[in-house]
Image (cartoon, rainbow, N blue to C red; front, side, top):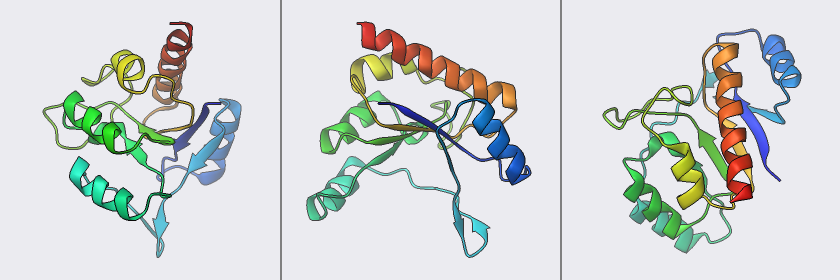
Length: 153
């Protein structure tokens, strides 16, 4: 069963974020802190890097950040190493090395991703959309609609 989560907006009141998540039916929230500081993920990993990690640690699971792919070939190569049980979802422009845009505001084709690459995905989805309430809800609705369509195909 798909579970929907989201990254919190660290600049907002935590209780407001909890209330927003509950009222919009998110299953969980992700918070990243280390020694009181927010951890920002800056890794664009290669399939070879992942292969080394998973060959040595086969029980470790992959959390795949869709906004970190270079292109769809890169995504396919990652999936050949390990299929994820958890996704970070945000949009991006391929001309940018790293960004997390609301779904529909970048170049990623999520219908293609879920129909061709992540077909049958059944795990956690964390929305890394740190924007307005409306853009977070719209992002979730877009992905839910795509996943509802792909289960009918």
